[in-house]
Length: 162
Image (cartoon, rainbow, N blue to C red; front, side):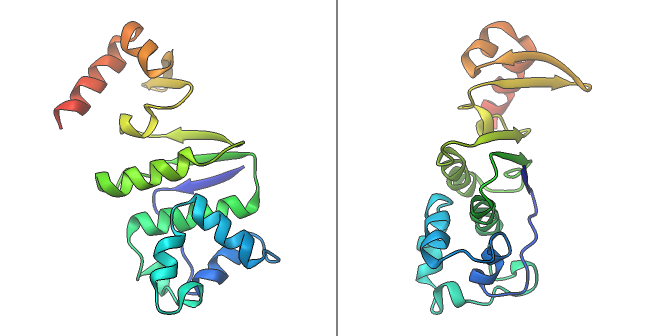
């Protein structure tokens, strides 16, 4: 199992070396493929030194969304079957969240568990569990929950108001 938190740690290394932490013998083809799935390859290739760019302490040259996508690519290189996203989009703007969501949707053949307060992060999930005060009070798809879980429906309506 791999975990991607809302603030993934990026080391003061080259981009490529941050990725090699997950799989030390990864080829550039594997690295680029993981970054393409994570929707970060285009950005990296636009940098003057591409994958040989130093990112600074905790990835200071990267935005929050870029750090998240780099963490997703790193996780993909590990080839774990289960990936847990723990509030991975909570501090991101809507455009960046959309890019992260695209990255998550690209994860074919993986079990993804997403812990989130933003419904837009989980709305397309196969199964959503609604938790209130530590108890599961509803489960199902987004459409099913809108019909049968008043708590979820209220959350969704509040989310629309924002």
